[in-house]
Length: 468
Image (cartoon, rainbow, N blue to C red; front, side, top):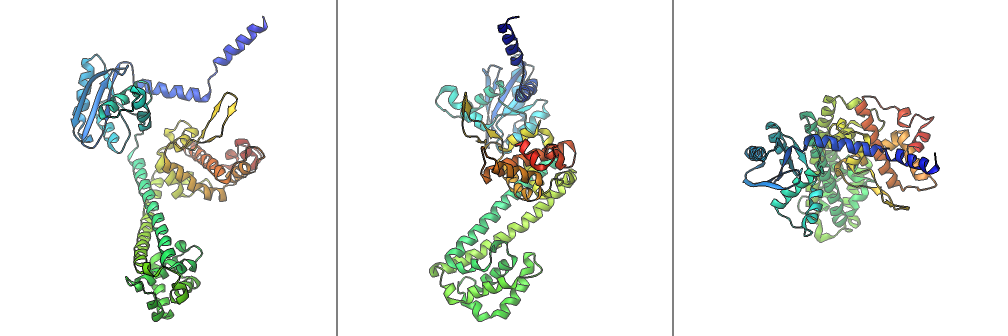
């Protein structure tokens, strides 16, 4: 046999090999093709508040019928029935319903479709946005055009089967959304307090190293601002005296969840209010209004923190109901609240075919930038669910302090000679590792094991280096 024949055989064998990504993509397309069959028409909806536009197309995205309905999303059963009748008249066995997953309306449409015995698929809004220009090179946007474009993307299998969360998983997601909003409110209140005091009374911020985290500082500031009222006159604290001020702070500190006060911080707040030189450092004309507004912001902060604590208690209770608390917290440094925040964004981890799919869902997977021999800078994709990315990022900080395997990986990524990552880049990579390990723990029902997490080598450092 000639050398050429050997080369051809080798190339032929190599061409038959499929990568893991190829196989998973093929499986995903096969799953979609089982729903979007050649015998089904596509009934695509462009959903809005009071006006719903639908287009019925064949598998070549040729429009067979159109309809505009003045109705709410939960009133679309008749429109779906109309689509089924039109598809049957055109010779199709059934329809597949399609829409963009915006807001809550797609869930309502999914339930209506399921009640009529048909499936719903979703098309990402970004794909619709990009496809508008490819339709006629103008970027023309209308409800009728969007419905047709959604149908076209479905016929090309550029769609996905949406998550159908059970009641418990759905509740966890809603609680997670509530917690995320409250954390944003608490952060905004803290920043507002700092901005206002920097303008009106900067000395107050110097009374504690981390004033917003000090319950003694918060109690003392509440007493001061309640005493000052709308006048902005801090001299009333001096006239009140240290003894009365200290007694009032002792009564107030229990309302902030503390049993003891730190007298050094309380005394520092009192001195900042009674020292004329330190009081004068602020903008006098702004003081009255700024201090009054600061009191409102402190009340907002206290309310947000109390609500966060209540929501987190409920989230942990849901995690217990799912029997996932012990498994998730077997990862050192990952608290029950941190795990619940992550799972509120992921939903049931079993719906992901692989741990990489979960990381991709978070937008933490690498985005290649290569062509031929050129290799550009690689960054994370940044797609997926931003709140999931944020939850993983927050969980990393405690995990790095408590998980030797992840700490070793971080040290390797920031200390290797070639392609050394910055601390921020390394934390992002470790956040992806944390998601992969959480997926493995929950889907296999096996508690976290450092030997498995490190790759089964002699030590965490070697395992981390191998994983990198």
